[in-house]
Amino acid sequence: MAEPHIPVSINHLSCRICRNLLRNPATIPCGHNFCLDCIEGCWVSEQKNHSCPACGQKFPSRPHLIRNTTLAELLRDTERSLNMKRKNQESAETLLKRDRSSADTAGSTLCWRHNSPLDVYCCTDEKIICGVCASTKHSGHIFGLVKEERRRKQEELRIMQKKLREKLQEQQKQQENMKKMFERTEKEAKKTKDDCETVTVRVIDCLQRHYLSLTKIIEAQAWAAEAQLNVSLQNLETKIEEMKKMYAELDLLAQSDHSVLFLQEWPSMKSICEKDLLSYKEGSENPLLPIEVTKRAMEQLGRQLEDFCDQQFASLSQTCNDDQEENVAEKDVEDQQQRNESSDGFTGGTMSKKDVEPTTREDFLHYACDLSLDPTTAHKDLIISDREVRMSADRCQTPALYSSERFTHRHQVLCREGLQAERCYYEVEVKGDKAEIALAYKGIDRKSSTNKSAFGANANSWSLDLTNFYSVSHKLESIRLTQLPSGGRIGVYLKFKEGTLSFYEVSDSMRFLYKVEAKFTEPLYPGFWLNDKCCIRICDLKRHKQ
Image 1: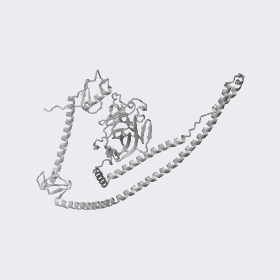
Image 2: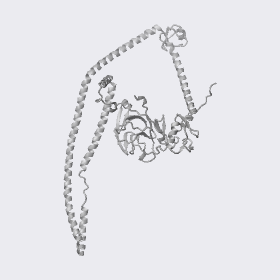
Image 3: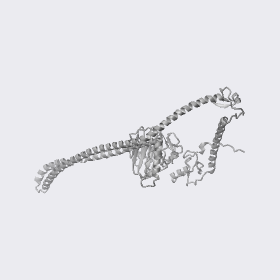
Image 4: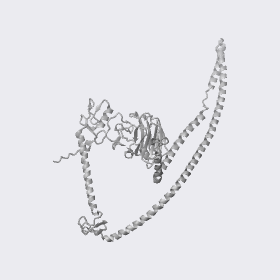
């Protein structure tokens, strides 16, 4: 006898913590069901108080959690039924397609339905059929004889041969041009190398000229400072002598035994002393100030030149790499050279894969890491979905369960994983007009309404801010980038031990945005902020790993 079908609502099979289907279901004493990992994580965060996240019932001690076998079997049977239904539907579609195509089986000269000769061609359906099929299933269609249709198709074949022959000639011509291109490659490479050397020498000459000019300016500033110090020193020596004389006269008056004379002399001497004291002002002008200003300006210029060169050469290298990937012949030559180098048996003069900086997206994907959003840290207005890799804002959603790890005042969330590997890379898709992609220490403030809990506004976090422009923030200091947003996918590349954090805009190529240099002292947790009209999704890079 068939088992009765009992309808089950999908809501009854969902966890009230992660809001997904139950995984490893466990039932607590009050009767509610949760994922085993979710309820254990919830009670770990509560520490002493153990209560039901659904009804709030408190338990005097932490209940012993075991797997609900019956509920797990129900979930498994439900999934098995869905799979069986899908397979039956696919089998039916496969049989239908097989029936439709069986009439066209190659090599057959008789109709598979009526066992009659295939001597009629249906022009409407473009199929070879028998006379019975023509009068029944193909009634009302346009027909022709097989031999006549063969002659017509033969003409089409001749035209196709002509087109193919012309295309073959084009390909052969292109082959000849490519062989000539090989001859030009060495000449062009040498010429380009010489041009690069010329540009480099010209830049060095330009810097050298400005350096010599700057040394003259510094020498003039030093001479002016010394002259100012000499004048100040002479004035100071004169004032010291005057003050010594005044002090001696005051001392002489103080030792006088004649009271009448003392009272007569003191008012005038007091007035003179007060007047002189007011005129004795310390020099407020720093003679070294011009030299210090020059030093700070040069340090800033040096950093700007380094950043500019890094960005431009990274972009140039990316462009060259893209062109090289499109040229199959050059790529084969390069692979052969690499195989020859590896077969030489020398290791001291070659670079390992870890020593080479990634330039293409395929290179970065070697360091891809798996991330998932932590719902216990998410602001109450944030919705975590799609297996904890997608987040959006909704002020009208059901109030979230209390968590001491949750951000209270800002639409922020952290990932579960702390990053401290030598190299880590992940990508994020942003849809909307305003968001922040950040990395933070686990100890970042969650409850403050001030900047202590805002990404990029304290010493515990670094943030890339996306609006109608890019900016990078740390310790309330923000740097606006010159690049404007042109895509919705951001790549984050962390070198923890080296202390660098780089941001890229990902499309067909890797567009460098900015590199942060810092000393990281503890694991960094990826985090995100978004406004009400924004959505963020962590990209799945598993299938790209090699």
